[in-house]
Image 1 (cartoon, rainbow, N blue to C red):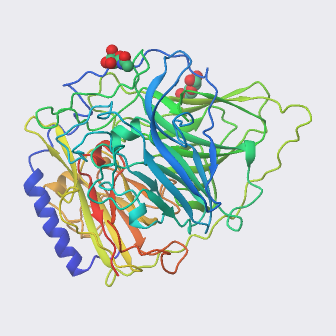
Image 2 (image 1 turned 90 degrees about the vertical axis):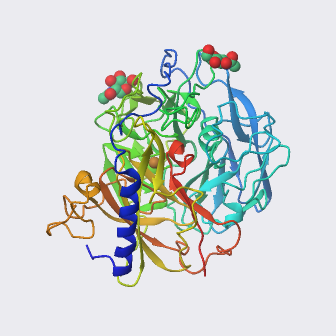
Image 3 (image 1 turned 120 degrees about the horizontal axis):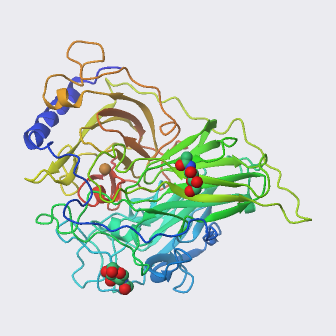
Length: 583
Ligand SMILES: *[C@@H]1O[C@H](CO)[C@@H](O)[C@H](O)[C@H]1NC(C)=O
Ligand SMILES: *[C@@H]1O[C@H](CO)[C@@H](O)[C@H](O)[C@H]1NC(C)=O
Ligand SMILES: [Cu+2]
């Protein structure tokens, strides 16, 4: 590891001291989590798993250059055979066809798509309680403000779904609103993106209510044509919820520190897992290869996914930002909120009639479940696969696992000349020791802009996590590469008995290990990466398009971008910072 520049060191030390001043005495009850003991969140009714067929959201081709209109509607949808219909907010082309998750929008590389987003939700306020003590949209005329963000897209900021670019059904706009007709140039490698609501202070409500959908960029040049396709390419939107017996979503309405934030909770742990909007569904598959385009669309929950048949492995071919350089074979895949995985499962050795279960073993909260959560937010089942034979006369699909996929460049940088920034993730606690905020260098969304990278330059960012939680950090506009992570002694660091500027092995270093090799969740192009507690994670950013050259839009114009934690409860309570690029 190369030592940071003198200027960077100076900034780092200042930040360190500020963080200590505010938070020195506040680590006591760090693991009092979610909404305990102030609110008891009852479990969902007991439901039989694997009785509903996996729905496939409608596909909409957005590559024809025509304007596609996607509205947000209030709908009801049956989430499980034995539950009454649930009230949701959902995207679709009409009230009658809106679905949770919304339609999968399919774009072609280098062909712009034009989406007009509309808000048809006429409720006077969201049906999941709004915590009005947070920084939030707060429309003067009421209503449910929405603003869709296409996660992972290289897009102009006026089309990026800035948190303050919201709009209501009655036509009221947030202060950063420019337009509702968004343009996505799709000038980036083929991958799975997703669109979801991003409204300031109520993103967690709107996403849990159903405002989520997938967006695929396809490429004829950069994507092998022999991958599993058609009926053998299946999108999987994985989310957790808690439901009442009447079908309604159970989201706590009393917060962990109600005198400060009446209903805000530090996380949301559901006890049922939905895939494509059904609780514990099943999918019939032929004994062939399948390509699954998986998204963790949960508010807070991480998933560590495994397959119950030991003959099967995950063959991961892609991550958030597109293809890996070559496939990796894994027994588990961990997805933080907002992470995607492009995987192949080869069912061809399995007998017709057999079942395969997709299970989850990630702790909640992540990565340390030793917190007070009642009842335990266990969600170990995800979905099932039933092997069935192809109908007579229908030929098996030929497909294969590629050996080489994409060229991932070697990240080049020079800490003496490139901009270096470091960020300490710290929590704020109330006088009883209950967490009330997650912050970045003790700053939240409304604090002044500090991240303004120059177009075309490389910047090295260090994320230093002194909280008990893993934070999936998402940057808008660009994808990045992880350089490494290193564990450090959190107590010694916060007690100022050591330094992160000193390399591992040198006297006075806080590091407890040399820089680690990347794990499977860190390789390839990322737009969201998890920073574990007591870890410094270093990323390489380049503020230009992935394919090189200049952005096909003015990235410096419009309301700008944001970067934030993708635990939506954290994002909604200030773990988000403005991001504006300059020339
Ligand atoms: C569903 O049940 C919960 C818990 O009893 C209640 O708070 C909620 O109002 C009910 N929702 C509807 C739509 O009846
Ligand atoms: C996976 O899920 C299935 C179905 O719910 C269950 O029978 C099995 O025990 C689970 N396996 C593990 C390792 O948890
Ligand atoms: Cu977080």
